[in-house]
Image (tube, rainbow over all chains, first blue to last red; front, side):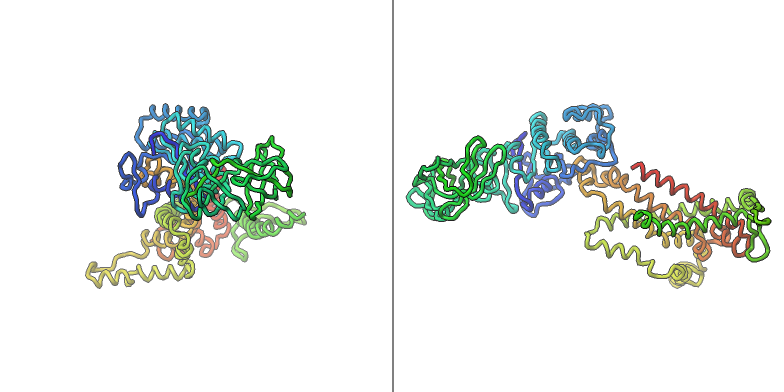
Length: 325
Length: 286
């Protein structure tokens, strides 16, 4: 991880993303492997000696202390002078717009305010690495997007490296410089949000991020014959011969005008089985002639075909991503 | 209607077994002692269908005038306070260990805390007498090993009294402390550690202050019954230490001065209500 980087650990429940965070914080010990910071192994350091800050899932604010004392807690443990504590706490509270609330107690704050207190309580010690365990999960949907963007602005302003655990793929893609997708305790793929989305390496990543259609078939002579979908794929990239899986993003599929025939390659004919309006887009579920159901996302302005009507689909060769596993 | 039906049984219970006895106690406290049965004269006499006041404040005055009662009460409060404090000091680590134990082991540990209650109270006190008396086990072992020549005066001492008190009231202190400590979010101490607090500092600044309500409840649950205790001082304590419970018992059954005993009982109750009210106000503030 680079200094000042924002890394998201993305995975479903039980994927080991929180455990990974607790390993870095020192609350769990690794059976094997090492946690390195600037090349130094953190293993001999107990949690209180590690240069990391942590925002807990439920925030874990100290309920018996005021906002000021919560934020000052770490500075006091570091033995900072009284005047310096007062100055740095005031700075920290100003950073997140909580001026004037320093005498409140956690239960007198809103969820968003509590989240920001938890954030600056950890940030005020200027840790090298900030660990955030689902920092937005406890917030209302409306507040989540704004708070997420604030979180990234604060991360840019402080220059600390952030590691954020989340199960929300939209959150990970929107906020992080790089996203690590975890599957059952293993790293499935690590990359920038765009790379991850455009070039998923595995079936799991393709399905987890943006719910791509996974088409399986047999590759021979530069084309893939996909029996389940009843179509022939010609990806732009080269691939090994034999059984192969590909990912096709729902929004990369075009619906051809009524009456038009599907192209022989990179297209198929099918029937719309479901149609749902999602606000910014339409979602169609199309049953291909081979029997496989494909998700197709159209912009909201398009006039989508009605349910139970036949439809022809087509896509560009560049949209077909050959998966490694 | 439904509300009244639900409230009626507990209200009736309180009226019959709390309010009525207190009222009778109050009436006795205001009456003159008498030689007959009952050993007091009703404070109200009936004169041709009209009630006439014939009570007296003499018993209440006697409580104030004779220093015996105030001294006995103060001694009892001191013993109760020491009992409560010792219970707290011993119960806190126990409660902390149980709260930090793996969840499936907690019921067993709690049963072990309550296990003494399965034996009769008097039996347990008799067991202490058997251990502590001059010919008892402890003196027998000490002399048998040649560590002491003559029996140590263990029984009928302040130490034996405190031993019996703490032994009897310890579970009352453990349970509220356990309830408070087991409800604390383990992430709080982790948050303290992540902010640079050593484990002892995390305990001192986070767990301890957050467990104070449980500690106050545990202290009071030991302190209040200990203040009125009379069996343990009688069986184990030094004979010269007149605690209020024993004075009360003597007034009722030996001197048969029921008005004075009733007044003393009410006074003790009034003194003990103060810490309970303080504790409740503290709870409400939270």
